[in-house]
Structures are given as C-alpha cells and as structure tokens.
Length: 260
Length: 239
Image (cartoon, rainbow over all chains, first blue to last red; front, side, top):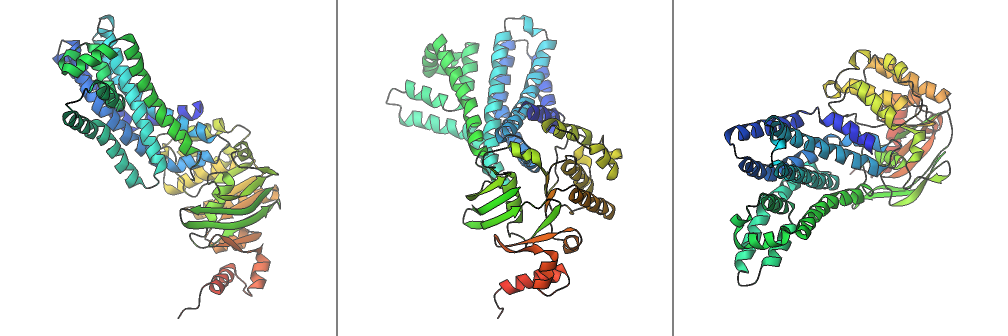
C-alpha cells in the first residue's frame, strides 16, 4: 500500500493541476497577508475559500485521477498485489498530493511573514487541519463515486452534484427547514444537521476557534456552549474523523466486489 | 496448471460467459482465444487474472482456487489490451515501480534493447506515442520469467519490426515450456504462431482443437475461412 502511495504521489506531485492548485494558494495567501495586517481576518477569508474550494477541487481531481489511471489500475490488479492495497495506496496518494498543495501553499506565506511565533498560530493550525480533513473526505467520496460508475460522464456529473449538495443545496434545505419548524426548539436538530454535513461542521469548528460565534446569533450561542466545551470539541472532531473514515470503508467494500 | 470449471459471468442482464470449461496444462503451447467482438474473450482472460469476479464456477491454478487470492499472480505475466500509464512518470521510473511492487529477477535490459526503447527511457510516459507505449507494455509483460503468459491483443499498434520481435519472444517462451494464452483478431498471426485454437461464441466454447483439426474439420486450408465457416454454421438462415 505504501509503495503504491509513494508512486501515485510522485506522479501526481508533478501533475499540472496540483502545481496550479499550489500556486493558487500561494498567491492568494500572500496577497491576503500583504493586504491585511489582521491575521484573524486573513484566516476567515482563507476559511471561506478553503471551505468551498477544497471540496470542489478534491471531487473533480478525484474522479479525474481515477478515470485517467483506470487502465494502469488494471495492470496493477494483474500483479501479485492485494486489491485493497492498490486502492488505498492510490487514494492516499491522491489525498496527500492535494493536502500537500494546501499545506505548502498556505503555510509558506505564513512562514515568510513569521506568524508561527505569534498567538495566531493555533487558529492557522485549525484551518489547515480542517482543510486537509475536507480534502480527504471529498477525494475519498469522489474516488468511491468513480469506483461505482464506469461511465465517466455520469461519474463527473455525480461528483459535481455531490459538491453542489454539500456546499450549497444542503444549507438551503437546512435554512428552509429552520423557518418551517421555527415554532419548535431547534437546538439539537440544528446541531445534528450540522454534524451531518462535513463542510458545515468544518465551518463551525473554525468559527468557534476564532471565538466569533457571537456573530452567529442564538444558535451560535448554543453551539458555543456545547462545542466550545472540551467534550463538544472532541465530539465535533470525532464526527469529522468519522466523515474521513466513511469513504475509506465504502471504497474497500466496493473495491473487493468490482469487476475491471 | 489452469483449470476452469463451469464459469459463468453476467453484467446485469447480459450473460457474457455461459459455462466455460477449459483446462490449460500443456506446457510449451500457445493457445489462441478467438471469437467475434463481445464473445467474452477479455472477460475470460480477466477472470483468470482475478480482475473479473465470476458469478458461478471455479478457476484453479495448480489445484488451488484463485477466489480471493492474489499471490498466485506471481506465476502469471499479463499484457493488457490498452497501454496507459501514469503520465508524469518516466519509462525508467515505471519499470522501477513494477520491479519494486513485484520482486524477483527480471531481464528488462535485454528487452529494452530488443525493442529499441533506449532513447525513450527518460521521457515522460504521457509524451510517448501509442506504439512506443505498447512496446513498454510488452517489456513489462515479458520481463518476468513466469510459467504462464497471458496476452490480450498483443499485436495492436505494433510496427513490423516490433511484430517480428514479438514472434521471437513468443517462440522463445514456447521453447522454455511456458503456457501461453493470447487473444487476437489477426488470423495470419494465429495461423503462424498458435498451436491450438479456442473459439468463443456468445460466451461458450464452440470449438477447441489444434490448427490442423480446425482446418480438416471445416475443410479449409486457412484459419480465416475455417472460422468463417463456424460462424456461418451458427447464424440463422437469412431471408
């Protein structure tokens, strides 16, 4: 598994798309840092971009990578290797190459500006960890979708739909349901709905860390009371970890049954 | 060596293999799987390699079932139909990768020389032409000394010189006593290289025998016509 991962990584790190992705984050972070002196604000701006862009790039790159390497995967499957080793290796290589772009692209400017010595470093770390988690979650989901669909057009369509659902449609439904059910106590419902969407979960975790949950009104206060506590944070991170494990489990299930 | 019993496979409603029984144990023999498009040639080959999981039936290699196994593939070299590799790796890196993943002695240097791949070794695989990629594919398939060699359409995209080298490699493998299974659409290649023919039609074996048997049974002196006779015998009378 580690060997497959290493070769996938050395292939992908030289791919044009990963390089473009990396330079985008470099330029973005550098310009944000030079425009604003307030690191908190930079982190929030970055958060808004990472929450949308990381899942989008992860799903698109994930399906693209799977379909591009399909024939080579067949060659690997004909070698004396375990199926799960091949697919986990490829998935890890994919997720790690995208994560490396994010970490280097955002981390390098922070390093240049000497911000690792400041108190803001923890906010920055949370941002990075959550960006990496989203990359793993969404590239895993995309990998699974591609594994389930031999038709590339369908695979790409479903991947975009998946992103659209979690990034936009879900929030719409969520808000609508809050309006419809406004006569009822909704704290627990809102909490559950948030945990069920990795992007929302990631957003809440960062906002709480930045201690600006007051901006989120009443629900924000409930969230802060719950998630702000140690047990709450642990639960939230556990939920995020579950989201990371879910696609891995599905990939394994599908990979063991699929015909190539 | 390889024993296939009552193999069935369907994709949804489409039955691709309907009860294949095939035993490949004659060493130093080239068996050609023939059949029209969609007759199940590739599915049969992929079942032996464990790429396709059969619905029913069993495949045994050296007496052991291959179901859920992977180590048996140490004994098989495979040439896939389509050659596509990670675009950003060089030829050298790819060969190093395969050797790293599948340990054991290789003679890739001789093969690289044979196919004249020397000047391409440091190029990205994404920059190579289709024919050159197929040569890389052949190097990977022949660089291990495995007792079984399975080739899916080995002739596609090869120039005449590479074809001659492929014939030499196959003849050498035959002399070394390997079991060779190949699928192809080029009948002259079968006529020249194959020892026996397995003819698939609609997922079942319609004919199996040596080239001489095929020609005498259908009273033709070339393979192409004999195959055409099998097909005509099967097709309904046209109005």
